[in-house]
Length: 436
Image (cartoon, rainbow, N blue to C red; front, side, top):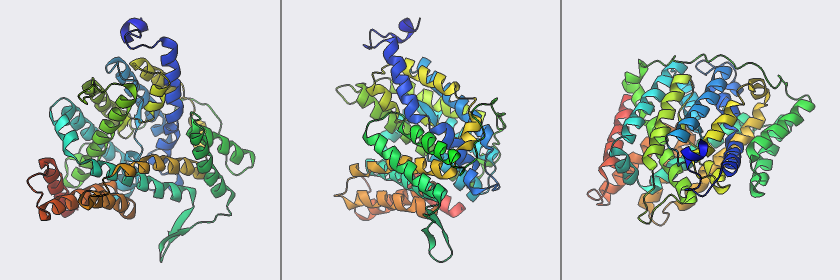
């Protein structure tokens, strides 16, 4: 039945290869089931008002990931893609929207839902291709790197390598703390395993150093399995705040990040999988984009932030995955982990922070592709990179980048050759600052 549906022979693959590919991708992205609830709950910051419930997000993460992978498997069936709540977006929602702007988790989920519906509409119209082709590559790369730096400062704070200082704002933490050292060791070990091409390096690093912390009595071990925590946020999204002017910036940021992250990931995986034709067009990208957007909507309904395609899917493609069967295996493996909530709550925050710091490196390394020889292209990209962590806001970084890019093009006489999309986003960004 699976052979007939996924047509292994046509794609020059088989059942065993697809299963191995799915397991490979799962190992490279399994960290999300621990990091997503950790970040959204603000576990390291204590009982701060506005953060999500850890257990509810854990269950929602597992189910939303599995469902999105199943949708990709059976609708976008030529795409061996893994999907899960996106890193960067979850930090933006937790620290920017809930803790920073004071919105409740339900109101934040309402914004995620609206952004997902807009993404779904865009995926069904020619607007998709227009937007992808209109935003300069330098801005896409700069914003991606900025999200990486945003994750880096959060990761370093979680590790307690960076701590508050009333005068200089930040300073070096206590490197003599055993848990801080274990967090640093986690970061280093994950990089070493990555260099050695070990699959699942992030999840291996997290578990090995957590076991060391438990054995040394530095952290509490809560067990391995239990019944899944209740889904507190199932259908609990609140759309009232999504209709206000203040939330418009949040929705735009969620939509922008998800849209271009998905487009970039699918293009990257398509290149590895040989799905780009001689004219440079990606085959069946419409089905993949639609599957991704439906996954975002489903995630918001279940109680987690934006679900998106993972670039780690390239690992499964390199292992031979060529059809949606790979996505099906990824979804099933995540579903099998739904009973591991006690293990997730046992992980020391410093070790989670070390893993998050490594993920930030994956975002930042794309800056090598920025057009450095043209300062009118590189400067707005750099502005996006540095303002996201320094203003503790992804949306501020995006807005400032587009406004500066538009102004530079006006004063350098490039107004007529600049895409209308730039002017639209720049004007919306100015309006958002005025509203704020």
